[in-house]
Each structure stands twice: as C-alpha cells, then as structure tokens.
Image (tube, rainbow, N blue to C red; front, side, top):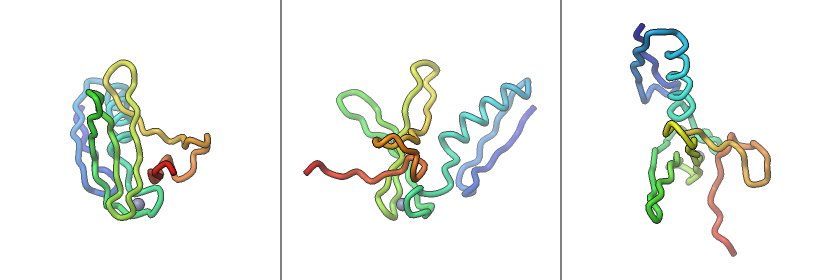
Length: 106
Ligand SMILES: [Zn+2]
C-alpha cells in the first residue's frame, strides 16, 4: 500500500510505501513524532525551523521558533537512528510540550 500524509501545518508531505498496515503505522508514527509539530509550544506561531548543531562531533537536532526563539530538542534512540522530541522539562514537568527558551547562566 501507498499512502500520502501531509503535516497539520501543510508544510511537509511524505509518501509511505509498505507491504503491511503495521509497517505503514510505524513509519507514519515516526514521521509524525518528528515532523508534525504544528506550532511553537510557547507562542503558538508556526514559524518553525529545523536546525542541526554539531558540537565536538555530536549532532544536536532541534526545532526552533523564529518568532519567539523557543526551541524543542530531539533525542536520539540508541538504535535505529530515530529521533524523538524531548517533552520533559528540566523541572520534570511536561509544560509547553517541551518547548523552552534557553537562558544563559548568570
Ligand atoms: Zn515561539
């Protein structure tokens, strides 16, 4: 089967081709988790940019809001090379769906 999915903010389309519904489900789940963030969790605007920072050979995957400077950081699963959004804040809560603003240390 072949299915086409468009993100809620209509910015990205993906085509998924798979033999079984379970495979399509898995692929769509993975895609949605990373690419279907409709808007910023802080200001609700949809001016989002995917960024990758490389620090000392390690890549950091982030979604940035160009309106307010908020960001959502993605973690990397140990196997499979897949990403997941880090929804948990440093204080243990899940407020703002994991979006935060970086505050310089005083
Ligand atoms: Zn924002």
